[in-house]
Length: 201
Image (cartoon, rainbow, N blue to C red; front, side):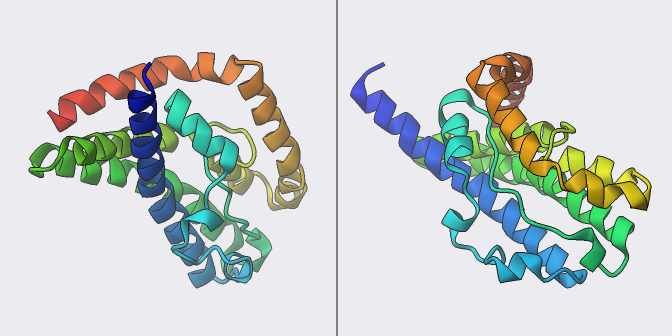
């Protein structure tokens, strides 16, 4: 890989991460606040500033491994008006937005008469959005899948379950650095890459 191609990969990858992460996390935070939990607003997550949403290691993983993650939006289910129902809704909205972004960016990449750099950025954003939507359904804290599971548990267990999110983060990082997570994700990444190529033309 030449320095030029590496620079292009980093630039288009980073721009694609912004397009993937910001709408997803911003809208999730806004929904949680609207449903009664002010925690995301208090910690600055109801902002379009991308740097409050980006996770450094997750961003690098997106750019170089084609999958990654963002900083989880802190949501306290006991602050929501309808605790379990609204917690489930907030947890589902992230993957739903990811799937919607896949369609939006894919359509733009296909029909927008744009430069090569713009096309590649939009194609990557479509791919990252769908990959993240599926990856986030894994039941590993603090991914959305673990919160969906937490919302479905009996209420007495939900708070206890959420206390152990920090250990889930460490577990996920261990899987990444031991190269287990990339091996698990590789078939999904390859399939989504082929799907994106077909969709974007």
